[in-house]
Image (spheres, rainbow, N blue to C red):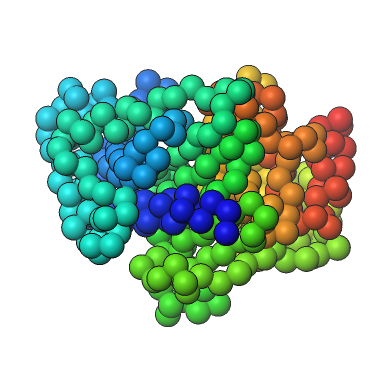
Length: 341
């Protein structure tokens, strides 16, 4: 199997980060601070980024990483730094000996901060291999006890080839709440999309696929919770053009990609509310591959493939449209009709 080792490392690292994030959520001591763009970051963001980059450096020391966070807050705040370091150590203790041998452990606070800062790679064209990491995608959802995701993707020559998404708060089976919450999704290019309950063996993963619909009126939307992330008004007009009457499911993070990939919903729209906004590659790399391998198409709102060769953002793309192959052209047509109107 191509990229078997990369997938294994990614799953183990994401799962360890999910353990940390779940512990922070259960403690209700989120340690939230505001970045320069006023977006929130928590101790879970810092800890998850350190854990995952530490694992990648242990297994693939030559690979650069495009990550969302950096350590300046921790270097200035000893109490915050100590809290993150304690969480990282606790999460590592839950790992089996085999996991620790495979992805290692972080040895010190200073090493933790150094690992976090290794996520500042700028990306761009001509890069053979790089990883895209969002340690807590949907931090606002995390803060409100909603949906969030730990997301990691390997990009080779501008193409996402491995994607792993951990969703600690997503139902294992939407039809059976007794099975609890916590799902890890994984995909490798050309090999399909898979899901399993967090904490179970990788061998227990089962194949997932999108709903195959031809009638748009039978579909349902999956949208961002935050109106600042996507134009809900335009999406309502698009829904009307497509004859969609089902209420939209709104959730934070790449859990939306995961949700439609296993058939919980059908269409994911993210239409920009600003002409200058550029999507970050770590917000879409994993989900892009997961949907594609589950039988769907992901593009921008003009039908163009997502371009991961432009640095840390998708500056060549505007908006996101994800749907099964049968519906995608119809959704793009409706999007264009609304935009032209």
